[in-house]
Length: 200
Ligand SMILES: Cc1cc2nc3c(=O)[nH]c(=O)nc-3n(C[C@H](O)[C@H](O)[C@H](O)COP(=O)(O)O)c2cc1C
Image 1: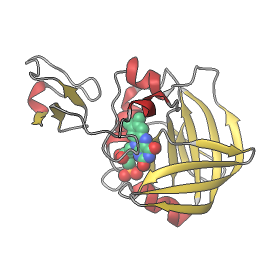
Image 2 (image 1 turned 180 degrees about the vertical axis):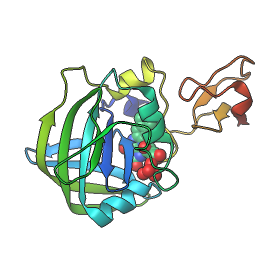
Image 3 (image 1 turned 135 degrees about the horizontal axis):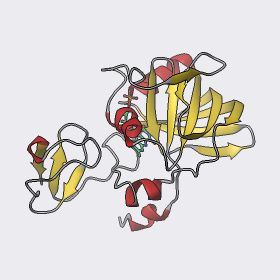
């Protein structure tokens, strides 16, 4: 199957926060005036926590959002570390944390239905409340890739296996090419060339 067309679908970039867990997603969609859906990989801890607690919030990332937020929430698991420890957080009306700085909006929601899609779960949720957090321009998935040089980790639904290159063992960033320059520095987490492994 030719997957080129899929790259033309536009998305935003968000953080889904629930109790003790949060992760970056691009698969958030508004489906009606009071419902959203989000698709989460079953291997992500946030999937388990959403099924358990049902209530969550979403923050809408902006072009100003620090890349360390994406690195922490998109490339590490809440199962292994407290992602919120190094950031200033606020609590929403259900006491679920979120990072307010450089976000465009907060959406509070509650899961009403779930749909099993093999490796992923589609969560359908009722919107409980929303709040504008800033007038900053929102970060689109396209901007994340083209301007921020961002990548997508294996547990994201839109992940595509790169053909050849070197993978950062710290954050998963893949440099595509035959030779990794000796002075290469990972654009996501700042790791040196020695932290990269060859992939075929
Ligand atoms: C730009 C970007 C988009 C992502 N989109 C999704 C997504 O839509 N669904 C998903 O399950 N994971 C997505 N991920 C991957 C998760 O954020 C990642 O696997 C995270 O480490 C899971 O954390 P957790 O184990 O604490 O839930 C995305 C990551 C990035 C960087």
